[in-house]
Image (cartoon, rainbow, N blue to C red):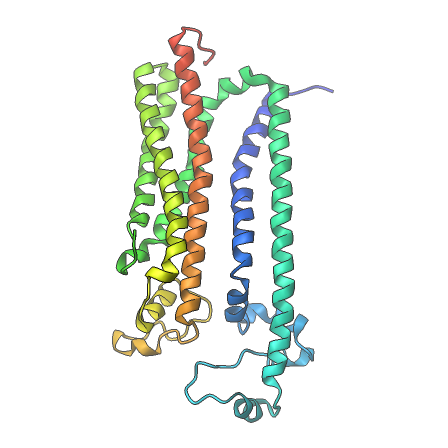
Length: 327
């Protein structure tokens, strides 16, 4: 059989691109495991969850009736009276509790399975990278990696930009280290600057430009490490250090577009009626989950930046010895 080095090289770099989504998927699966109960509770009455209700509600005909979550946020709410008046039954609470408990058990098992599958795929990808590298040899890989590794920084830029946008709402609240959103934005801008600098420094074989590039990429690496650690740190302290008022918690739930939020378009004078479905504790739990994902994205992005740092160091070392292998 013929071996195409060009196709193998393309395959090698495609695997490098695929690594990030699976790493993020693994982290998200195990992170979501701890918040699945909250998510199920607030998704339960949505139309998109009908098939889930139909699967776990007994009888199945109750999926759109007494198996729905009761409106416990309503004033003067009485489960028995509400159930009898609306559906003509008195067992709404029992039907709902049994169904959602079974669904959560199933959902947690499915989430753990997805996480395990992601880990297995990451191991396969890692083995593929190793095998591909052995076949095409380091020399062939290094001939292409200066340009490509810089283009791979687009993955990191996308992650940082997304987190800056997603966490920007934090700036409006009294949360420690709320500048993390701006920090992610600054890291994205720094990487946008680094891409053309790294590409042209390698093509022009300029040691001076490569030195500047190395300093910039080293700073970005340190910044991503800091933002990753900071995201996880804030996630750990925010349940204790951030105590929003009921109004603030409702505003956050509306800003984040949490599932099932009612009345988010109400004017400021009616803030007490906004998103009564989400308690302060549940809202903060979702904020914690977001910050944990932000920390994970920062660390995953750092892998690509470290790759760029290693490549630039190799190129500079080859230039120093007047033995560069780059075209």
